[in-house]
Length: 123
Image 1 (tube, rainbow, N blue to C red):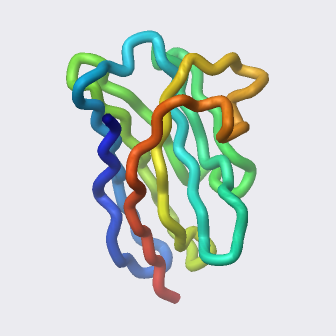
Image 2 (image 1 turned 90 degrees about the horizontal axis):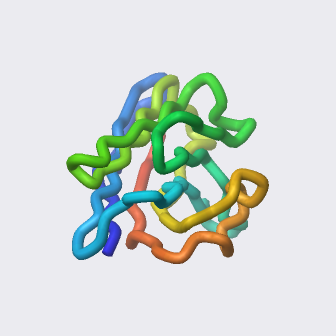
């Protein structure tokens, strides 16, 4: 099971750090991705991190503002979100799976999903 947490209400320009913790299984050798979905919109790729932590990938809308890291010893992946904008408001989901790099942005390629955590950025 995956458990996403850390969401909340923040003013524009502020920061939040989301966590995605695994229980019952580990992230070992799994790519972990973050996706978000705003009301009335499709699920959007935010970013992902390879199981080694050696490579990360980001969606164009968050590049330079968000950073993904992982601590495999704690079975936890983090999404540090800085310079938040109102358009970042969404439910954020973490997902894991053995996903090849070329498919890392496609939600259907991930096997396990967390329940989502709400992030609201006020203007």
